[in-house]
Image (cartoon, rainbow, N blue to C red):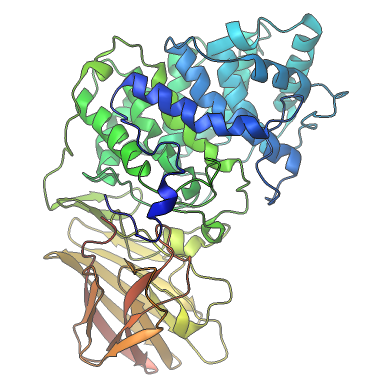
Length: 583
């Protein structure tokens, strides 16, 4: 699996690089390799892991708790699955000191909607499944302080989304220590979580219509873990919902191991496959063969092992295919990427389990299979070596680059999306898989949400309104090796238009050239990404936007069409192919 030759020298710093990643013992070794670089950055009192000075929307204390707690998803699961060679002493000491208000490394009191509540879920899970190592050796005074610290969470507000599971996980950990809350504790959170269920295995992550990777690595993972490890307190039908979700979500991954980059929190990287391992742990008769579940996870890990995702010390970077804070969320601290350790929850699967005995099976979907996934608003096609989705667009204005992450026309495993720089001018933006409109004196716009959506197994039809006096309808459908877009624009003002195809990697060794023009209305990037005007009313160019906009590679080129929409009604259409992308 090729990586940009300018980036290739940096792959060797990736702790996963060169690892076999075939068996359970391989994954245990990989887990330790990923976590070993953290030890040099652990504080004297062991309660904080200090990975860098960059900030997030929360304080440094919470950020340093991230570095401490996130490895526990993997370590606790490995312990539950029989792994005994884990050094628990740093975590016991850190837990003791981090919850002690008199200690200099105290994590700080819990506030409402506090990042600490997120990290305490990992501690709750670890207490639930590894209390013999993490809890029992503590002194009685230390146990009292840990309990008192966790008990704060019962009187704190949680964000009204997947966070509500954190309350349940913290409570499960408290019960494991012998300090169980009242029998009805968590009923309010369970009811609120159930209200987010859309049907067919899908959830929306809080208010709005966001349906993204949090469905897998949050909603399903947390529900299944509670059902499996704390069945006496769980009241949900998580397994039945997971059985509906599994074959649909499997389509988000291609035969090379690449997952679909879509939505927020892409810096969590291989956390995107956490669902499949936890589902395998919990379902004795899975809807997909053991070898298919195993193959999705292991192919994805092997793909990530060939990407430059860490710094020179082996610390996972904020970014996706490379270190890139441009695409990050405002809640990403230097420790945030270790949410990826949730993939190693599959280490809770016992050694003798059929998951580990099964041979990896190949990508389970044939070429050109198209499926309508109504809940995320996708028309999805699995081709030979890539997944492409046509998207109706989701509304995410509260997140950085929400329009790019949720509302582009198309997303592909072969060509992950670009974000835009904050100061990008209209004619220099990347605009991959977007139709951008510009009016003199106004900020330029792309689709940020859809005001009306109609979905069929053949066509996605959406209406969106970039300005009060402009209404655009877009029709998206697969055709041949690519897809067709049609747009009807009704405007009270004249508009400048730029429409982009898929971003294609550009050799980082080449000099920067802004754009190459082609008046024929068709333009193709080096690796086959192309856009073809179908109405004869736009010209084309191969455009090189600013660096570090693509999630996967620092430099890309984007085939674009440029034109003008007069006031009144105008129609535009184009054919788009992804090409070989980043394979």
